[in-house]
Image 1 (tube, rainbow, N blue to C red):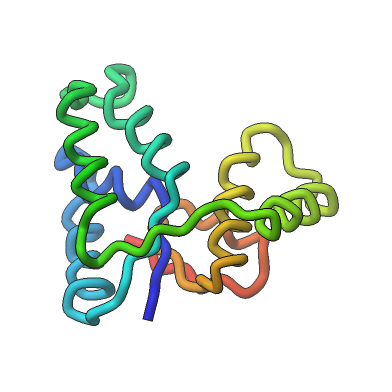
Image 2 (image 1 turned 90 degrees about the horizontal axis):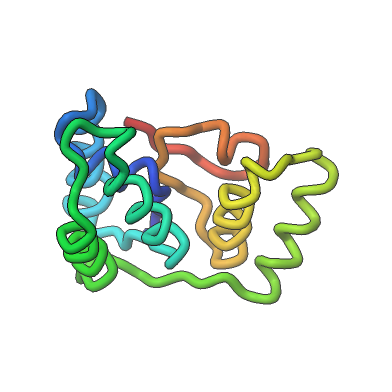
Length: 144
């Protein structure tokens, strides 16, 4: 079994000051570690993760870039992680999905991630933002 990780989920696992931290940590254990599942991770998730967890406007105690990079490398190299990448197929799907749903610029990254997961055969996603994926039929969302 494989389950995709959205940026919002990783942020909640790592930032203890967030109210959803405990639930996100619990889901990581139950949905990935105890279930012996793989966690699908795309490079664009880690890029957004670094952007968010180092932002002093979002958190009282943001991580330094050095600490954030250490955490991102940990996630990328974790035994449970399967790397998934954008492909020609996922990019075509991104364009197909964007137009009929009239998605604006703030939905570009989320739509590209959804298309990357879909093209990789990933239908379950750990996310805290249902709006990012619910517009596309066929995803099962697991939320903290």
